[in-house]
Structure formats: C-alpha cells, structure tokens
Image (tube, rainbow over all chains, first blue to last red; front, top):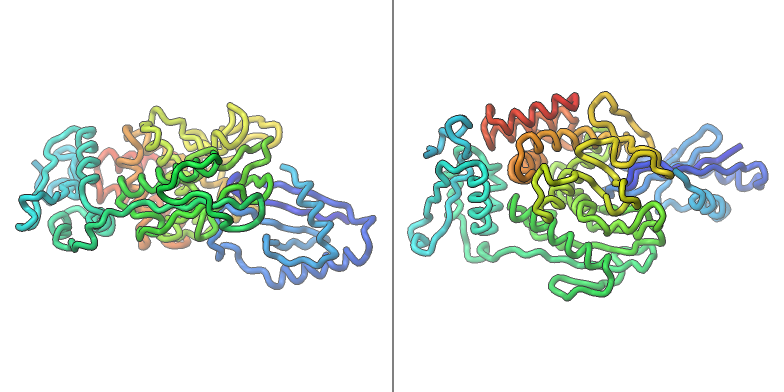
Length: 92
Length: 377
C-alpha cells in the first residue's frame, strides 16, 4: 500500500506529488496514518475561509482516503519522518 | 465643450463627466472651487490632462472620486472641495517595512528596512521595497487609492522565508517571498509583477473579497495578475504594444520562460524540463477544475487574464488609463461583484463600469464586450 502526498496551489499553481510504499513500515505507522486521515477528514473545513492567497495546499492520500493538511497541522510524531521524506521527494 | 449630462456619446465627446475635475486654486479657495474644463482634447491629450489634473488634487478628492464611482453627472454633486478639512489636506505617503525571515518559517522576522531608510546590501530587500513603492504609486496616482485598505495600511513584506522556498504569498496581512531553489525558480523577489500580484490580493481582500475557490478564486488570481502586470507596465512606462504581458519572467529560470502570459495563456513556458508546458487556458473551452488548487484558481485565471489583455490591447495606449480603470472600478463594486462572483458576473461588472466611465457605445465598452465574447464568457 502506498501513501501519496500532493502539493497544489502556490504562486505557480502547479501540482507536485510524492509516493512512498509502506510495505516495509511498521503497522504502528500505518495505523497512525489511518487515524490521522480520519481525524483530518472529520475536522475538514473549507480552506477558502483563510485569507492566505497563493499559499501551498497539501493533501495526503492513503487507502482510498484523502485529507488536506496545512502547515499548522499537528501530526503524530510517528508520522514526522514519513511526511518529511514525502515533502523532500515532491516532484512536478 | 461637454456639458455635464451630454458626455455619453463618444462620437460627440470622448470625455466622461468625471473628468471635469475641479481643481482648487489659490485665488478661488475662499469662493469654493475653480472649474477646469478639459475641452476637446484628443484621447492622448485627454489622458495626459487627466493624469496631470489627478496628480494635483488632494488625497481626499481622489478618494471621493473613487468612492463616487466616477458617476457620470455627479461631477458637481460631488463638490469635492466642499468636504475638505485641514486634516484631509495631508498628502498620504507610502509606508513600507521589509523584514528578513532568515530562512526560517517565521513572520515577519527581523526588520531590515523601513520607510525612508537607505538601501541595504541585500538586493531582495531593496527589490521588494521598491516594488511596493511602485505598487502604492499606481494605486494612488491612477486610482486614488491609499494603500491596500485605502486607509494608509503599512506595506509589510518578509523576504528569505524558509529555505529554498519556491513561492510567494499574501497571508491576509503581509507579503512573504521565498528565495526559490536556484534551479527552477530564482528568488520570488525578482519580478515587480509578483510583488504587485501579492499586494493586489490585499486590495481584493478589502474590496470584493472574492472567495478563493472555483471561478471567484480564478477571478481573484486574475485580478492579482492584471494589476501586477499593470504595475510593471507603469513602472517601465510601457504601453500595451511595448509590454510583453508576462508574469514572473525573471523568477522562472530560463530566458524563454515566464510563469504566466496574459497575452497568450498556455505559452509562458513550453517543454520546460521540469514543468512541461504552461497549462493555462485562454478561453472557456479549456476551463477545468483542479482539486489540488482550489478548483483551478491559478489555471482558469488565464481566461479573465486574456480578456483584460484583449480589451486593453484593442483600446491601445497605456493599459491603466482606460481598461485598467474599468477593471479597478469593477473590482471595487461589491454589488456587481459579490464574494462568490462568476466570470459572467465580472464580465457584466466591467461592461457596466465601462458604460459609466466612457459610455455604453464607446469603443472602450465595445472592446470590453468583445474581449469577454472572444474568451467565451
């Protein structure tokens, strides 16, 4: 199962993405990922309420689910390494 | 000679009533005001005269003109000089502050240059300081607007945000610029139109406040590009023929690349090794919703961008003088351009404002109508 991070928006308006195969990751990471996605989907609010313009939008997709992240989203520490790796791997 | 209510037929008179600007003169101060008739000038003379006259009136008069929406026939009613007070005669001035984030995710960061201080060693700091000044100047000298909020708001900008940050944004209160990665993007402080774009997001926020989603979001982006390119043209004193109508030509690395083109959306970069080809549509046949970009706000902005270009180019001269004024008046018309405005709403607003400014059958209004028709709106 793969997890995908998508970066959209920004002044350029072009999408970047990165994927990571979680086969070798611990079940703990996968469970945290599923729980985080579920929580993010529940608390999702339209980002059009924000006054920010040209900021990046981040989305995470896993196991058929998709949720939006923001720069301020607090992730469980178990996911920090994974998300940092995905951010570093973002490509157009 | 125009009479107050007879200026709607361009065949008879090209000068709309709002241009009969009343100037104060020393000898007439006690009596009220002096009328300055711009008479039967050519278009160029008319516009030069308007700029000169506009540059001489006070801030309050400019604001009043803007607030009065340049209503035809309201020239005398506005009685600009009647509302003068000693306080309002103070000329507004730009107030800028530039901060350095030191490549950290902090805002605003450390103050490195403030209004009136000398240039510093950092080119990025000086660039955005100058660009903000040029932006303030266009809004004030042409549209009578005193800063982002029309009330003298300080222009706060942060440079060197994060490390290799490939973006610039408006956060609701200030502008933020990244340095780029040095491979695909150079510093986002490299283009005056990008600074003008971000500052215009602030102006939109204080005016029609278009929601950042779907067509209203694409209009928000388009207004930022339209005024960004006008700010560049004004700073370079370029007319519609001299301008390249590009956004971000120095920021996207490579001599053949820019970030967007108002003249030819979809051609700002072609076969770029990392980005491929500019996906912006020039008309509604290419409209598409990108779920990763608020419904394609940076994509579909190409459509109203191109409408502005077509109208301005067909009218000729300096973009900010006629079609730019129409776009500004539409942007400030909250009743015609609601928060969730569609392209069709903005089209209607520009046609209505052009008719008010220049007359329903004037060539400017015709050019605006034709432009929207060409892009399929």
